[in-house]
Every structure is written in structure tokens, then in C-alpha cells.
Length: 322
Image (cartoon, rainbow, N blue to C red; front, side, top):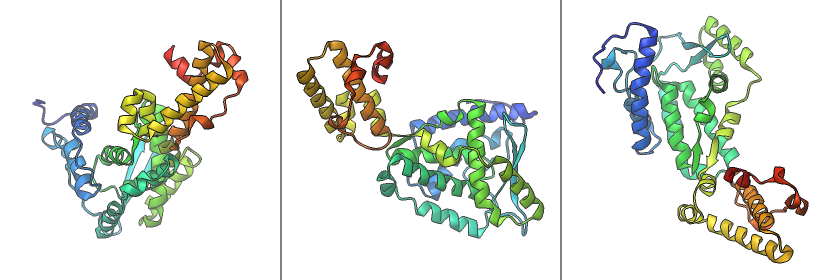
């Protein structure tokens, strides 16, 4: 990427230049992710890769891979931001990034237990990940770029926990982005308030939290954006490809085939009714997989009257095919 500009003049120029380089570096990370050690070296490597171009392009506030220095004695590290859809200014304090905060960061990362996370159903995983995200975001180890660094870090963490994290679902529109920022800031404020040093900073932070209370929580948003990888495989891949990747799905496909065969032998349905029955089975199994459970199709109760209803009762699977 060649760019001869070294000192972008306007805020818009700076944002456009930063976004251009960051977009390319994030794409590189997604195609060649770093070793998922989930330690400080891993976190720094993500930040370093994303922002490596910016200092020499006239954006010296970025220090790729470097932690920010500790705040002065009695001072608070506080940021203010404007939402896209709500005319209010938010004030969020973060850790002092002193020796105590650095030690806590190391402890938080050292405690990440991939094997334990893999054993959790989606809702419990969302609870754990959202709580960890809030704690790491409060520590806010970098001068700039913490959110983009944490998003990629948690994308890898979810993937290693056998889930897909759909960040696009949380940032596709200004309203969605503001919901995410509010949920994140509320979670951080609850971490931060006991540690705020200055009276004015405490007033601003408390007032911000009071304004934001009652919005969807970070845990709720994480839950809506996490999907088990085997649920995605069942939805998107052929049975042979899905079972090759996730052998536990073999029993699922076998149960669908057996339940369909039983239904066919018992009721002698028309091809259309049999197809509808199979679609309803798949819908029920898909829902259970999305919730982190494996459901045998033989356990699905399909009301027989549904199978005789007209077009508006087609299964989700059938509607997608059409």
C-alpha cells in the first residue's frame, strides 16, 4: 500500500486514512490469524498488526503493540464519545494502567480456559465471554485501538470455543453500533466506578451510567451473536461435509433419516407432505443445535395437522429453498 501523505489535515482525512489501512490489516489477520495463545503476547501481536502502518502515515497517537503508560498520581484515564443516533456525550473512565492494572491484565489472560469454554452451552459461553470482555476493556491497555483489538481477540476466542462470533450482526447499522457501544460502556462503567479517583470524573461517569441503564446488556448482545460451529455446519454444509467436520452430527442425520422413514411407513404421505415433515424435523434440530444441544429427530413431536395445512405453514428449510 503506497501513500505519500504523512500529515492528514482534517479529522475526516485522518479517519479515512486510518480506516483504509486498518481494513487491509484486519483482512490479513482473518486470513492468517496469529497463534491463539490468548496471552499478552497474543493481544499485543493483534494490536501491532492492525495498526502497524499508522505512525509513519501521520497518525502518531497509535503505538502498535505497546501498552499505554500509567496515568499520573490521582489522575483518571477517561474518554468521551458521541453516539451516532443519540445526541448525548458519554464519559467512560478506564484503568490507570499502573503496575496493579498490568498485573490484573496478566491474571485475566492467564485464566482463560479454552477447554472449559468449549464445554459450555451458548448462553453460558456468552456470559463468560461478555464478562471477560468488560474486564479487559476496562483495563484498556492500549492508547488507541482497544475495541478493534478485542473484537479480533474474541473472534478467535469464540472460534477456539467452537462458536462463531457474528460481529456484523452487532455493527451493521448506526442503531446496532450504538446498542453495542452502550452495552459495552455500561459493562465497563460498572467495573470502573469503584476505582475512579477524581470527583469530577466520578460525577461524569455516574451520570453517564444513569443515562444508559435499562438498555440491552453486553451479555444479551453476545448471546444473540454467538452460534455453535456445528450448527452452522448443519445449516450450510452437505451432510457428508458436516459430519466430516463434526462427527457428532452423524447421529443427528441418522435420526432424521430414521424418523422420516418411520413417518413414511406409518402414514403413507404424499411427496409434498413428506418433504414438509422433513423440513420441520430439520427446523427443530437446527434450533437445538443453535442452543448448543444435540437433539435426536426421533424426539421431535410434529403435530400431524401442521402437515396438512397450506403453503403458509411451510418449514423454514422449505422457505429457504424457494
